[in-house]
Length: 223
Image (cartoon, rainbow, N blue to C red):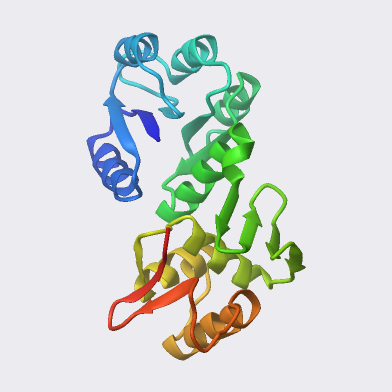
């Protein structure tokens, strides 16, 4: 996935670039309206993150250029927390969402993935073995039969499936699944959630084949 990040605050650029790259995105950074519009003319992006206020130019002008160059590409505005006018104006121009600064990294990633799923409905279906998640509807099925999960179990399973083939540490889970909801979880409670989830999605929870333990490191869902 290619991201166009239009931002002139060096600290934000550095933090977002590291975050997005760590999640597997290819990031192109521009600090000006002219540079961003040039990128949109010559390259294809999956999503654009635009600062409203640029030292040279306007995020609104970049949004208009994005809508002309790639009408289906989702645009998310980065705005000051108290800038109601910019928020409304950005949404009226066709942006799909906005993130108020300062933002929480995991909330931002959730918003980005949600925007991409809505723009590409086929990508919202994730399958491992006989378990299927339709992220657009929130429905989970196993061998064609619906599996009923709690909200936290669903978020946990979705996080695993979105990272197929990658190591997921226990700290990753705590930070992404629980901290994003403003909650705290102990190691023992995490063990309980993993056990309950396996009981619902594994054919044999005592010998899991979907959510596999990587001893001493965390978990992995195989491709």
